[in-house]
Image (spheres, rainbow, N blue to C red):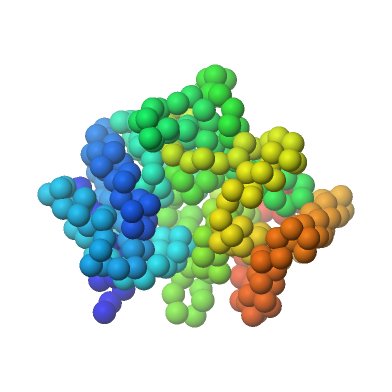
Amino acid sequence: MKTEQLLVIVIYNMARGSRVYVGFLGYGQSTAKYLPDFLDSLGQQTFTDIEIIAGDNTLNPEDNPNEAIIKNYPSVRHYPFLANLGFAKGYNRLFRLAMEEEADYFLVINPDTCLQPKTIEYLVNYLDQHSEVGAVMPKILRWDFPSHCLTKEIDSLGVALTKSGSFYDIGQGQLDGGELNRPHPIFGFTGAGVLLRLSALRSVAFDNGRYLEYFDELMFMYKEDCDLSYRLRLAGWEIVLLPEAVIYHDRTAAKAKGSWRSQWKERRQSSKLIRRWSYHNQIIIFLKYYFLPKKLSTRLCEIAYQLKRLAVALILEPFILTSWKAIFKERSSITARRRALNIKIKPLSLEKWRQ
């Protein structure tokens, strides 16, 4: 079976050659419950030259709630992956499809979101007017899905890079007072919602010998958006938050900052799988970018952070130490990715983003 036949394709505008593709990934009931609201919000967009494509990671095609819901939308076509490819590999298939059909932009969007009617219009217009920008993301506020309430609580205003090399969502948990009302440069974007320039993706792709990877496929899920942001920045692309574009996201996540006790409590509520992949991918990012030119203080902070994480794992989370076995097996692949980095700027210039 060809790769294209393994895609779930959800299309509102069936005309080929659309400039903008909107892609999302589904997985069983965890995404099916959101689809009516999500697809309705896409159907209400003022910008209509779009094709909406989705990869469905549901394992059992005979018991797929996503398909049952999609049948209520006459213009929808549905083809399953027939495997759980994860976030990175699933989206890479969708990117390749959009590129083959000569799209200009690709909106990565979670199905547990709903969009304001002009969101895509604002994002597309911004990329049209700013050729130096490789990614533009909307303001993301919290969606209280059980009560169908659109809140003023911030989910993400972009991704920040710390001196230790870790990342966090800017403003998460705070109330949106409208203070940030103009386009604002950010270090990175969150994969919950971002419009990507496909030419920018091509410029940072990694050739694994079989096909091009855009998101790093060593990262099954989590932090692949941080990694791609890093590569786009190194290649000289700008990343911008556009506050006038708004989406709402149903995520019960920790606040960006707080006491170590509250952060640890939130972390303990995450599944072991999430914690394992988060730790694994943070190590990959460390190994890919540690040897770039940077301040000595930054380098020491990064080492200290990795040692602290290792100590915490040894004492409190020994199950995540299996990540090191995977890292050892992947060491040549990680080295290949580091050597393939497309660096167009002075890496030291990224120090200004560290918080």
